Amino acid sequence: MRRQLVPTITTVTAVTGVVAFTLVASAPVGNAAARASSAYAVSAEGQVPIAKTPYAESLDGKRRSTSALELPKNPLLSVRAGTATAGNDSAAVELFDVVVGPDILSQVKLPPDLKKSCANLPATGADELPIPNLPLPELGIPLPDLNTIDLPVKNLPDLCKLLLTPPSSLLGIEGLSVWCSGDQGGVDIGALTLLGQRIAVPTVKQSATIPAAPLATITVNQQAKHSDGAFTITGLTINLGGGAQVIRLASATCAKPAAKPTPKPTTPTTTLPVPPPDEAPAAPVPTPVKTHHPVTG
Amino acid sequence: MRRTRADERGGGSIGALAVLLLLGTVAVVGVLGNRKHVEEVDLSTLASSSTHTTVATAPLDPQPFAGTDGLVVHPRAETALYSAPDAEPFAKIGPTQFGPTWLPVVEQADGWLRVLLPSKPNRSTGWVRDEDLERASSSYVIRVHTGSRTIELFQQGKSLGRWKAGVGAKKTPTPPGRTFLLGSIIDTKRSASPVVLPLGAHSPTLDTFGGGPGTVAIHGWPRPDVFGAAVSAGCVRVPKTALGRLQQVPLGTLVLIDSK
Image (cartoon, rainbow over all chains, first blue to last red; front, side, top):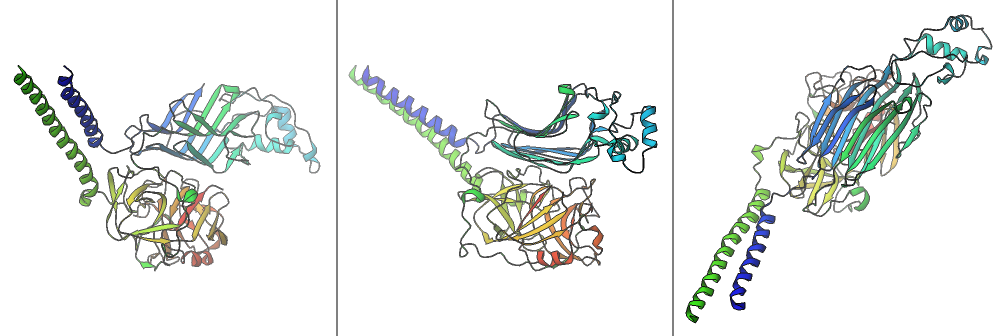
């Protein structure tokens, strides 16, 4: 009985081993992620919901990119252009010219007393005049009940200017760029305006806040690590009306990559020394080529 | 009886050997099949990456605002581009663009280099096998800041100059991210500012421009009022002194565009 088992066990072991080897050897070499990497430029939840637009997802690890030049019609926000790209354990979003709350103050009618005060500002000393505390009407987007003192102005002339020549938006963002690779990512933010006034972005470090109270709570570079190993980074999270409306701009999710068949690549900036001159000579000064190629001007 | 048992044992062994032989053959074919696939790439079936083309499947630049160690490479012949080391080829890159092709290396693995590509979309990369490549080192970095509308030139980390520059207007922004000097050309059809340094990037809002593919470039401008303004269709307009310095910078040199 024992002697009969020997070839059987040999056979089973051999077959198992060779089948396993065959499967490994014959499998296509690649590193497509088990969970898809994805990215989107804009989404909103709350009174004005907006689906993730544009949205890109990479199911097979290959790069997918999608762009949108306009959003579904809504009173809350608009963009000039947004591109979302997702690849194998990497994703990125580029967003240009975002407007939150377009023409928000153009519908505000000045109370008669304030109108009169604005029309009769004294030639000198007007800067010293206090801001009257008057309630503002509903502005058409979810915001807390606001008074004139909540607006980012220092004095009465500033308030008059703001209400008589209203800015084109509550919040304007010139450009926003977000990317992730594996479990790391970053944010690049262009000029930002709050009711027409440029506000400084103090830092783009994780979970930094941009002061815009009480109009909005703006958080930069929100990051989350998921239980399955995926990583999400969101460029700007704008909270209006104490959570009644949440807008997420430029969000990228990097799926955890499957085990790679090759050693993990190293980035030259961190691990590789500058090649010695004898190994990599100085790159040549280019010789200009006479040709015609239309560039963007 | 003993003989019969012996025959049975012998039959089992022969069966095992037959299965082993069969599966072993399949395994060897599998291994050789994969190797053959990597080694013998039919370049004629692959799309070429250039400023005129779009290669949608190119992997993303994993660190679009990071620096490098300055390594640049020149493919001596048409070379396949891979989505990852040992993965499938998805495109190819030729030895010339406007002049010789020089690409910055942004990542390295055993026998493989990841380079930035000149094709659309922006931030495209590809892996090339570390063979038939001429290596060189650029000690320069060009930084463009669209917020402050300035351009800076560094050599070995030291600033060689900072100039006001005209950058993309709101509707036609200069795309942020990491790109590179793709060429150095004299465009005789641009009589006012013929020196043009095309980059590896394209306008994010214009698919075509003036009959071209929307290539973003650094070039001069006849009037100084544009320097320090967001007025262009995506290109970076620089003063004459800046352009003179930038013309000396090797092809493949990294150009880092941010919103600062």
